[in-house]
Image (cartoon, rainbow, N blue to C red; front, side):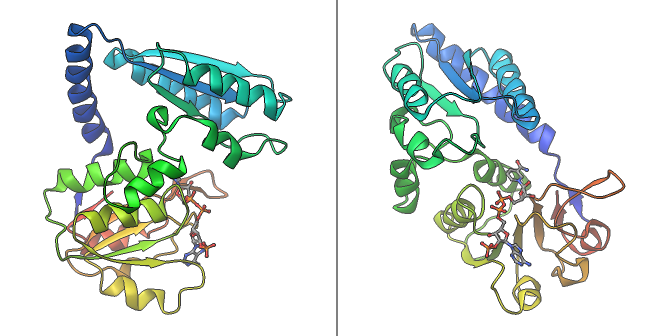
Amino acid sequence: MANIIDGKTVAQKFKNKLKDEVDFLNGHGVKPGLAVVLVGDNPASLIYVKAKTKACEEIGINSFQYTLHKNITQKELLRQISELNNDTRVHGILVQLPLPDHLDEELTLEAISPEKDADGFHPVNIGRLVVGKPLFQPCTPLGIMKLLEDTGIDLSGKEAVVVGRSNIVGKPIALMLLQKNATVTICHSMTLNLREKIEKADVVIAAIGKPNMIKGEWIKQGAVVIDVGINRLDNGRLVGDVEFEEASKRASFIT
Ligand code: NAP
């Protein structure tokens, strides 16, 4: 039976470490500040923003929330970002996605100063990740790396299979695994013989968004499985992309 990777415990350890770093900065007269920009009232976004504000409070970071009307123009949004870029109380800026349809996501993210780009989505920060000199890194893949680190496994030389190639999860996690010397295969909807790829994997990262798509019997004995997928079934249950029951009989570690 696999060991369950407990994300909440790993997150708490990470928060404790951050709190020490924040205390150190406070001791040197710097109070870190994070600005979160929310456009409109998307219910999921409201929950995420609330969680971020709470995490800031826990570790002693100043958080500034800017809730903008859903009909705000692109020009007004860019003006707000420019103000935050120049605000010395603000060290990190997050624009909560998704934005309403009339706003251009790419233009908006590119307006954030790369030095304050807390989500790591600015092309400069993505480019830094590609050349192996990361500054800010996207949070979901970075969280996956923290989970892998916590298992204690050495990724060097391991066969890692990433299923999904989105800019927020699949592509950046593939780069981070490569940086740790794993041999990385990226799969997507056009990949042939997905099963064969998974069967060879020492590490499986599933970021698809399709319930139980990866069958438990495909998982190699002793593999590490990180299931990023969040899928709600018709009966209201939340499941991942990997068949948990069967996979957990084979994996050494699983989320
Ligand atoms: P996304 O942008 O929709 O990307 C999904 C990826 O899965 C695409 O690259 C797609 O391939 C691939 N895919 C779709 N069907 C496939 C198939 N049959 N075989 C192989 N690959 C297939 O999703 P995302 O934003 O990366 O998110 C993925 C999942 O993670 C979602 O469930 C999301 O809710 C969840 N998520 C979780 C967190 C977290 O913190 N836990 C954070 C972000 C996202 P193509 O590129 O060819 O279309």
